Image (cartoon, rainbow, N blue to C red; front, side):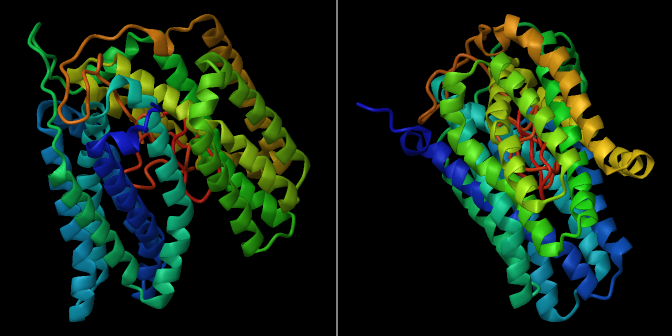
Amino acid sequence: MADPGVLRGNRDFRRFWVGSALSTLGSQMSLIAFPLLVLSLGGGAAQAGLVASCSLVTRMLFRLPAGQLADRMDRRRLMLGADLVRLVAVGSIPLTAGLGHLAYPQLLVVAVVEGLATSIFTPASTIAVRDVVSEDQLSDALAKDQAALAAASLVGPFLGGWLFTVDRILPFSADALSYAVSAALLLRMATRPVEPGTGKPADNSLTAGMRWLARQPMLLRALAFGALLNLVGSAAEVAMVVTLRGGGSGGTSIGLVMACAGVGAVIGSLAAPKVLKLLRPGQLFLAIGTVWSCGLAVFAATRQPFVLGPVLVVLILLTPPAGIVVGQALLSRSPRELLGRVTTAANLLIAGLAALGPILTGAALEGIGVSRTWLLLAVLIAASTLLAALPMLRDTGLIDAPSAPSPSGASGASAAPAPRTTGDAGPEAAAGPAATARPDAHPDARPDVAAAPQSNATPATA
């Protein structure tokens, strides 16, 4: 009899996946609605930007402590508590708006509180996948996560903008409702987190995940390759807008081209299981590096939207499978007691480097021009491919390394031989451009491997 797949065959994962997908969609809607709401209240561009920055900075500051918390406490309760906090925080916006007391300071507080709750939810959510999915279903589960994140990132901003035109509070009501649904589904999950086995004393230090990663050269190579892809992806988002503007394209054309990244991410996520059967990790990374180097060179030669859009789709196609590879490696190799800290350490590498992309690209565009900036990005990808992807052709241990046995979970999670770590679309610690192009664009975005120029980016290799 054919395998029904993780969504049909694992009830707990289905509840987890539906709740996470709805929550991601709601957050993508409010993501675009937040600056619009600030402006509608009479605020300026700087105030709108401050709201977004407060949320992102909070998430970055609490990444490592949140990972440590996820390693020491019941992950399901952490996720449930984070969802309830986010429900109250975001739900306060429609409540105070209905009472006529909505003001800018409240939006700043909501951004900080939601960012803190999200920083706690993310590593706990990453480990929860490991708790409810058996080893043989892991790749399928990460592929489903990637597809849901890509679809939400593609549809959410458009839906949020449309709801805002109907009523400026509707996107926030929808986002709050998504957290309520996620919490309700978490309550119905039968699987309980597996506690670490007894043995040598656990390392409870904040940097334990970083130190473990430092001893994994193959995994570090894959993460570094993904981090560079994310850096170039976030840089390409800025360069693409400047390129299209310089070619005379209007706002509609620019929006359609940028949406092509989301289209590529959705298609790539759906095709990921077949791609992973055809290509080993080293071959996959080599293919991505080659395609990206050639595609970025094409961007240097033309400013026509009808060329840039299809090429962008092709660039993003292979990044979701890469995210799954890295996420599966993290989940399968990391010691269970370090899963939260390993995940957050990998995410810091991915998101931290990507954050430099827009700043560096702006300087390059002004200093050497548009075409040379694209060529510089192409050379950077080519060099990282030679240094990271080529050695992986000789070393096949990224996924195949043996993992320590772990106790079986309940209800649908059969004895999974090893702890796993996921990232922001799979794993939260992704290593490559995946579903979206902005790290941490969404709270539940699990590997945050984003490396594609688009309206919202997410990790791909994670």
